[in-house]
Length: 306
Figure 1 (cartoon, helix red, strand yellow):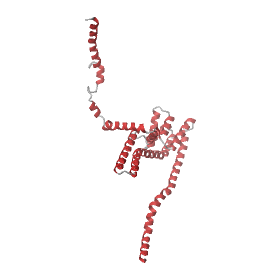
Figure 2 (cartoon, one colour):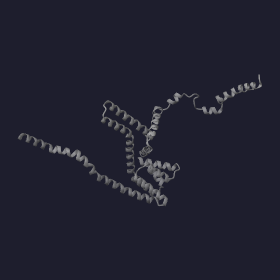
Figure 3 (cartoon, one colour):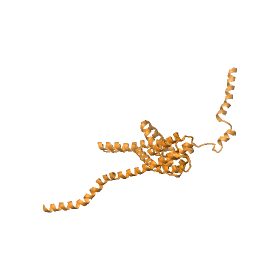
Figure 4 (cartoon, one colour):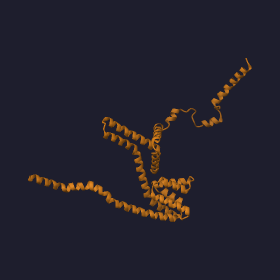
């Protein structure tokens, strides 16, 4: 046998134990393997590991993610940015993230289209076609309207709570607290969306963000003009060294005046709002009750004369 062939056979035979050791890993009694296996079973059942998650995480969540990805593909960038803005103004609810909203738009739109097509197939016609188009549009735009409604109510509530909260901050600052401490006190003692936004602003400051950046992010998360003016006044006071207590006192006074003016404006709008139901609903009923018996008697009189 040639020497080269003998050496090759010996090398192949010696490589088999090395290969087995590399594939098998470290010995079972090794310290590293004992540390890795501490507190864990030796064999993991993949079926049990999957079933340990909730049914929504196993079935619904992947489906929602796939539908959201498809909806993102067909949604224009401007529409998607507006939808993200509405979600942010609505408080970014944990139950309705942007992916779930996109999936809901796609599902409701498809459901409306399916119902409209079924009605159109059963009885074709222009009216059924318009109904199908309206059902598809209503299903697709329904989540947008719900988000817009929630965001509008939330911003209105923030504007309603702002004067009282600003008065509390002003009193706290004049009593000797710092501006951040006064914000923290108002956020901890208050309830509602404004307190939540103030807590989030304080968390941004504690995370290392500057006060100006945190307040600018507060402006970005809300759509209340009075709150924007207050934040800009505080930023200008920090930039020019104006006493913060004086700025807060002026801002709280202006907010009280604006609240009174807003109440007067709503009171002046009441007669205009009442006019339509008065003309359409109340006055016809009054005419029927008052003029109806007389009209019946006149008709009977003329019928008897004839």
